[in-house]
Image (cartoon, rainbow, N blue to C red; front, side, top):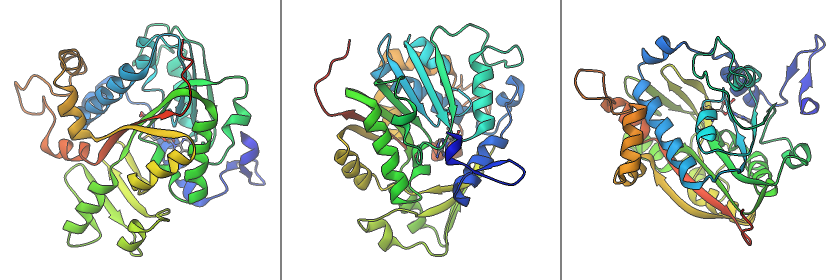
Length: 327
Ligand code: SAM
């Protein structure tokens, strides 16, 4: 995948677009936290809630032996979820070299990585690359076809240009087998734009996050048939501080259909929580991940500000058109 990088005379790799580099640099620079640091995070319950949402998605759609592609896999925070689902093979791709290295450490069960001690049961390939630029089907010729493609909190980085948004969907479509599932989480554009309209400036937020839109932001572009490159700066305490792009879900849905990916469901994270908390199995899972705490003392549960951040996101699932030949 290095052929898609530009090289400086010193030999350092750089992505061809500055905004791609800024995202890659931000995530690459984020270091692994110790368990103590993680528990002290101001958004620890939000992180746990997000893990619960991702676990529910994995459990809903993954079957034993599945071949899984994780786009924007980050530091491998979902590896244990895939192990619990007893998948057969895993490919993780991420643009941030530092994250891929941490993911490899976590996969190998390095003693310094306190997130995991047990040996993972599936073979894996971890690659550093730009999923919204590289023709992944050419790179992963012998790895697929995939039963599952997961993209958690990473798809919105493809909406900086139409070409990148299309490349993301082409990659997923080319690699999934007919009947295969594409699911994930990303910002809910309707919520972001509603909050922007209610704000008295181009910025809004609370004690744990802020979002600031560009001076050039225009509602007309958001409503147009070409709503790419609508940039905002996102800051989430102890997690994110980089540019992101609006993904109007109706356009995403029609574009996905062009690539044979049909919508199964889309739900704002609040609605998702309310729906799956009706199931005893997922209530039990929520208790185990500890997102809602035991309510006995302050800070033992999700704060109102963290719950507001959850509202900024949605969960989706799409299915690749065609006859299902799932085992
Ligand atoms: N999926 C992981 C999770 O849920 O923990 C990481 C989520 S993190 C918010 C977003 C990830 O997307 C980062 O690891 C980042 O490096 C990755 N990313 C952003 N742009 C990307 C691109 N063009 N190609 C591959 N990965 C990308």
